[in-house]
Length: 245
Picture 1: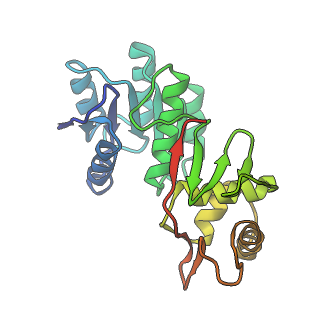
Picture 2: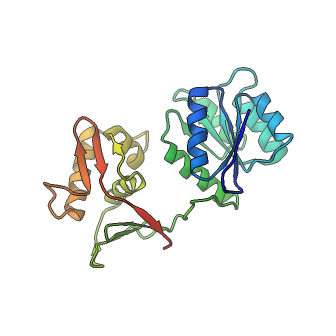
């Protein structure tokens, strides 16, 4: 399969037999500054690695022929290659086995590409590598004069005043700031804020949004930042940048 270059030294091996997932994901990863080696099978991945070197592997568990767990074991034992598994919702046992044999992390399909990139950068940092666009965990979020410090969970307004926020409000705000101008439905917000195992209901998201609006909006009934999208959820309607802490 093909190798896709970008302006970075960090190379990712993507192994997935599902073309409709693999090809757009390659485009996204290249756009995020990675070099991507693309393989549609374990055999193809093994062939590529005989000639090229990767810094991290993304491996689909369920593939025809040699499965992703067998390939992952090979990558870890022979190359000590950091690996993230791409798994389906019903593959809990396989995920556990993957982690037991040394996989660094897993992402459940369908996944948000930005979440995957965040996990990639986290694994690379643990492995002593950095990637293009990785501002670090301590990078502050800026939006229209507001600043959020993710390590101290401290929010300051454009005048520099500290605005007290709870941990739950911090998590909700950070979810929006990580996805500016994107429509986030309630299920996605629950996943990002509480985790996939949380047994919560949609109204919990609405209540949390209402509390957050009272902290950052001039008029919480006519919000400028956190806008309601009819039938779709919510959208953070401002540009966000990240700067060193």
